[in-house]
Image 1 (cartoon, helix red, strand yellow):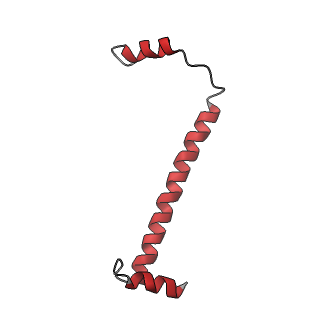
Image 2 (cartoon, one colour):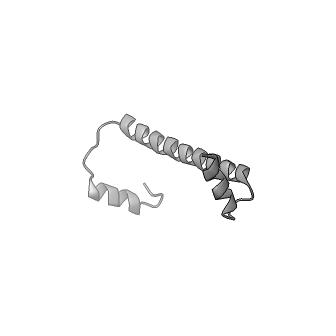
Length: 69
C-alpha cells in the first residue's frame, strides 16, 4: 500500500503522500455523509406509511393553486 500511495503522490496531482491520504479521507467522509442522507430519506419514506394511489386530478389542482398546494 505504501508503494501505491507514493506512486499516486508522484503522479503530480498531489504534493506528497499525506495530501493523497487526506484526499482519500475527505472523499470517504463525503461518501459516508451521502449514504447517511440517502438512508435518512429511505427511513422517512418507510415511516410515512403505505403508498396510496396518486389522484392525478387532485395533484394537478394542488400544483395550480396560488400557494402550490
